[in-house]
Amino acid sequence: MKVSEIANGSEVKIHAVISGHSIVLLTEAIFGVSAGLLVKPMEYFGKYMQLLEPSNVQIRNKRDGRIYRFMSTTITPVKTRYGNFHLIRSSSKLEPDNTRRAERFYIEKLGLMSVNGNRQDLKNCIVHDISMRGISLVVDRNTNLRLGDQLDVMFRYGETLHNYEISTKVVRNFIIDGKKAVGCSIASLNVDLIGLLASKKKEQHTELDNIPETNLNPSISTRDQIKEVEEDIAKEEIPDRPAMITIASKPAGSSGSDASGRPANPLDPSNLEHIERTTLREARKQERAAQEEQKINNLLDLRDF
Image (cartoon, rainbow, N blue to C red; front, side):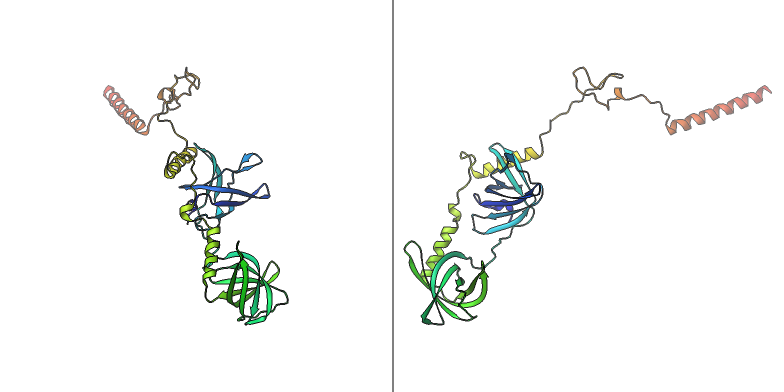
């Protein structure tokens, strides 16, 4: 995906270095143009930023909810008919950071779990995140779980504190923020869990049809707005040239400008210095003429004798 294909209203975070100081800039995508991504203007101590060196950019695309990290080529301010903005350019292709096949949603709720069907000994846990394929649990330090253990997890979530029950299997052990955690796979999804995942996805992601468009000029379409902004950017990068350039000539021996004060044309024949220089062809012609003249003079001398 190109940087110009980022959805309108996406959150943009830029990690840059200015005068040896690391800063983080937050802005929002306006829309993509042919040159890059147009974003809301950013200021640093009252001045518009101009990052000509590569910077790390992180964008949460509002269309698919994924996070894209890439290196920008330049980030420069641009002046358009709708005001001042910034343009992010990048020659690299954008790849999503979360390359999981199943997207995870954070829960962070206290729950209970039983190990291998032993409901007489329930243990506390924290449901860290959940997906269509698995669930992550933060467990007590004294709880030892092995790969393959069957866990029945129960927790309440939502405004109505609905009770959810999930049967899982431990597939790995790891650490979350210094706490002991396990990753579990889910063999089958019940109706309650499917409804929970659907509601979490709706909360986190904005549907494509509901993405608000950024209108700089509500009287025309977004496509026309993009076209006008591209024209303004092109004019800023390549200034308009006059249709005709008039260079006045000056008379020989005059100063470097004409009567109107405009600079004189240095290539005008009247302004060029007169240089008498015989060409090679003319020199040979003159030499042959001199030789013929000398022969004639010799013949005249012999006749007198």
